Length: 517
Ligand SMILES: *[C@@H]1O[C@H](CO)[C@@H](O)[C@H](O)[C@H]1NC(C)=O
Image (cartoon, rainbow, N blue to C red; front, side, top):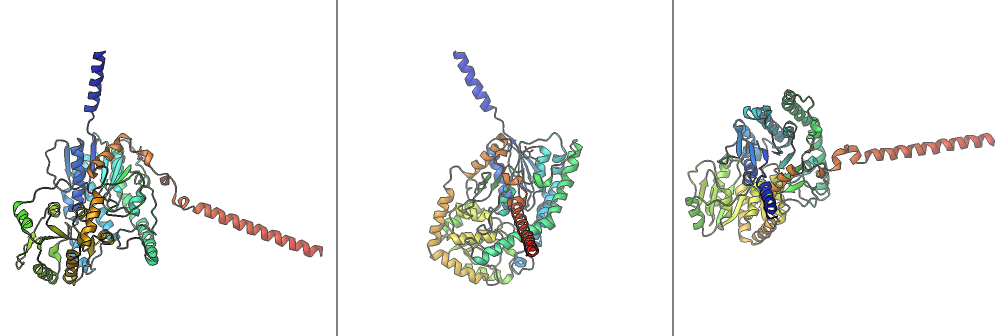
């Protein structure tokens, strides 16, 4: 009896200690600092949970964990830092970061990544296998092909606030009357013209995608994945239009405390903040600067893609003059050294942003309003001034202004003057700090930390064989059936037939009447 019991316990322990880590392929090839942080967040959390991670990234990743294998695609690193992201050019509308530019940039990165030597080696090795794939969605769906190749489920990581595109990947429709297009500054509730514009924007973007981009995506998908499958004796690549909508989940880099309140499908999991690790101690010299700032610190950074050094000289000089007049200490992430800077202004080529925002003396953040910067501002409860430049920065800043913990300043040659008013307003009016404090409490108030939630859902997808029970029946309906167009057509035909019949009957009646009279 006792022996039996012991055997039982032994089996129990053996089963649980033999739960091996899953093999996860993490694909984050966008060569930009914020996307790197998002990818690193997956890798860090998955490694901590004991999984085996293969990480496709353009950047190095410092780790001695034997469960990590890096596949570095460094040759795409310069794809983004070209002229398109020059802040002056964007400010003067010499270039527009519109849908077209985003698509072209992203599809080129996708192409270069998939044709990269190390990635090709991985794809062409028939002995490679994975339990699940996490791929970052960036303006095309081509990475869904990984799941056809490795015959395993895949998860989209969506880097932005939820929108019609990410919901569309799960077959969900979002009503443009009250769902923001994150590329614009319009935040619901919309007025009449905003509602009209929202619909117009939605339709034109969709049409543009349908006619100009879909084929490019599909061709790349077939060009890359078809020959590899053929080599393995599989002649039929799944149809692109089916596989791209076959993700098991979307892990969204958003939280309702930051973004919109939307009716999300059950396989859309918001996990914003998962990229934030324990706060690392500041380097001593920087710590001294922050500790000694009696009147607080203003931290100014335009993120990793936009460079402060690209500002026109006049704006730079105006900003330096403005900062010099402030009582606060200003820490400015700036890519070059500046000669005539005032004593209270400190330049950092690279800034440990999270550690700076976490310091109790940090009273104000001036940011471009990228999703990660906004999330970190809320995480560490620092009110901010947003200078949105492109894409979702417009929505992120507008939504934060609506929530009362941020102000927006438009990029223009008058930047310094406008900024001065905003800085005074935010520092002297306590409502921004109070609103931020409450939002931060809301944001932190979750059942489980976002990093653990990420791990839970990745494991969930493996354990449930791709979570097919979450898949919406909407994915099985053609669009005209979803919109009841077939039904409307049937009704119209019936009504027409009915009218026609009545008419012919009446004519017959009349003819008979004439005959009989
Ligand atoms: C879609 O995903 C499910 C679950 O992961 C999988 O069983 C199925 O084969 C996939 N479909 C295609 C076309 O790959």
